Length: 508
Image (cartoon, rainbow, N blue to C red; front, top):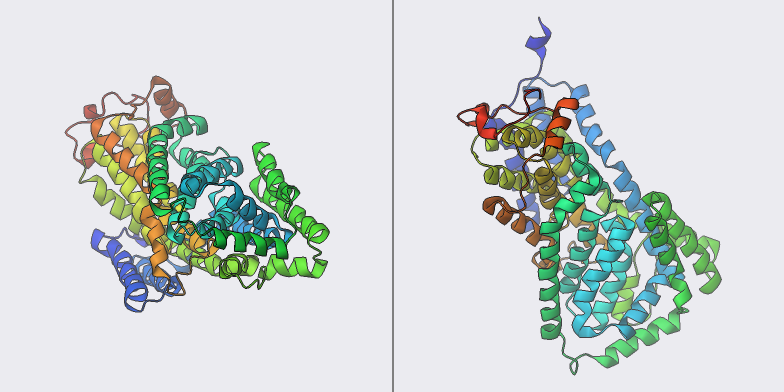
């Protein structure tokens, strides 16, 4: 029997959709019927169903396993970031760094501009650190405490934190997703960042305006519970030494990021500095510090806002999120290995016959991959790889594609609760969804900058604004690096000439 006879078959569209639809139904059953926010088991069953589809198509276990672990391996650096962020949260609370941020925030910030300021602060820190997760778990956590002191609804504060944090992750040259998107589409990093500004800046300005309006609507100067703020600041002073010097661990981490040091060592330096600060200023013993880094910080002040906010952190607090990420990644890897995702994308491409349609489909595919596979990296890498030849075949710059996968991938990740990004946000900010506080899911529509950006991107695609065609330099790059250019006649175009001049020597 020839190798061709024994090679796995490609799934039909109906078969490719089967594991996706069944998994979504299982997720809906668990989340909405049972009211249980633990999506791990439905995703694990989805992984098993995808494996059975793969066996039916002729894949062996070794090949399926390799596909699953390949995708998991790609995201292990982010899992490492999660572990270090868990340590930082526990140690920075014990050191007084987070309590100091909350204390001065309650004193300095105006309640009316708090939401807008929270978004800007998170954006600046995220651009500096290159990690939205690190920003959410540190500055974002402190802002949740400040919001509680101002009596701002939890979901409004979380929406502002997510908007700013993931904006920074999208445009920071230190961010892994910002580097991944141009890498898989064959583009320059800084050209990619510049091309994202036409959608990112308007979305942030609109979000800023909404948060300013919401601040003056939700919080009135004469209605703020100043006694409540005073009780929180007094309790913080009673339980921690408060000083601007305690912000040093955060300042050093940001300085290391600005100096373009790798994120994991930079964050771990913050853990070490936080541990020294906890020992020198708060009287923590070495064993206490180990406990805070592993299991989190615990405190009973009698002030519910402080207790609920500061009783968290540690590596173990991240294990629920890490387990969800690993299972979701495995599911995504199985879908990719069996060819299910490729078949679905190919079916989409046969239905669209314009640049606007392809751009919209690319954003939608990244979003759908985020929804189904639960992984922001796969939602960037897979559509980026599969749509690149199509953009070249149409004569458009793949900068359009790198922007599209960031909009549907990076920015939509925190808005999907079972996605790696959403799971981390819910856990790090203490939204308590698993405990039944489903009203806090309102942070999703209130994270305006995240979902407005792809909407603006789709508008540009259909109006032709900020949608560059391939430059001569880019076309030469296709030839020199033998980048694949799709034959658009296979997708319903009358002739390849409709691509308006793709390079003659580029491979078909």
